[in-house]
Length: 305
Ligand code: RRO
Image (cartoon, rainbow, N blue to C red; front, top):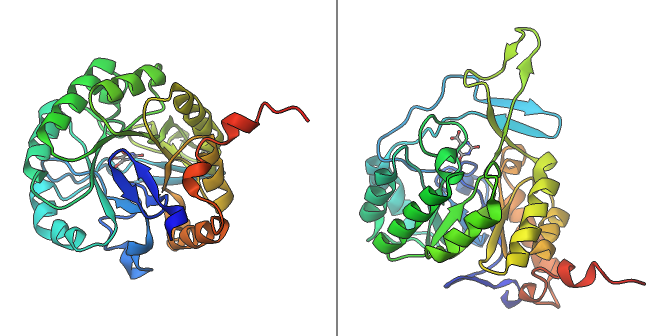
């Protein structure tokens, strides 16, 4: 459906609905529920150079309006990913966005180099994982690190690079500026918020690492505020991510200035949500081009009746 097509950087997406990293495995897991090729794209679980077992349990804790996670970047590592997951991903008829992470900056460069020759659309730099001791979010709050890693990865890989930002950075707009200056094609706003729950029976933090990543409906207004501000900078396309549970949420992101959205923890509650949102988008945009409504709230909200 042409009305749903949307260009982000150098790539045209068939619709704005993507599945967020860490919530759809490597695509195959979601394909048990529906044909993932109807989506605008999928973002794979972040890959590191070496396999990682992840954090000790518990890893998920439900809160009133979202969940805390402390997965700890569990993933099979680059070699196994290339052997076992890439062949499936290369056969998909939707955009595949490969997410990569690292404890040291060199890991990002090595992985990018190894992935160069495979068929996928975008490399998403996870500079925002809140649940590891080194790298992750610590890179994402450090403006020089964001600059260095993005610049080098862009030089190494012959594909578009997106940077997934952390809401913990105190200077988010400055980070967006350096992503643009370093050759990134879009920013993904955001990864999870650093949060805490106390297990009152044990009178201790729920998680061994104490803090964990918070996602779900509660963060949507917080993320939308930043999407709004990033849009006003007018530097880079925005991929909105945070708290989407229905189509009205998708519209809020588009109208605030996101060109695409990533559906995250809602996949855990309803694995079909991605397919439902695509159908709702088809209905809603029957007579209108999605491209024409991106950021539209910026032009109407100050209107006086
Ligand atoms: O695996 C995780 O604990 C995790 C990652 Br890599 C991330 O980027 N964001 C998150 O909330 N959890």
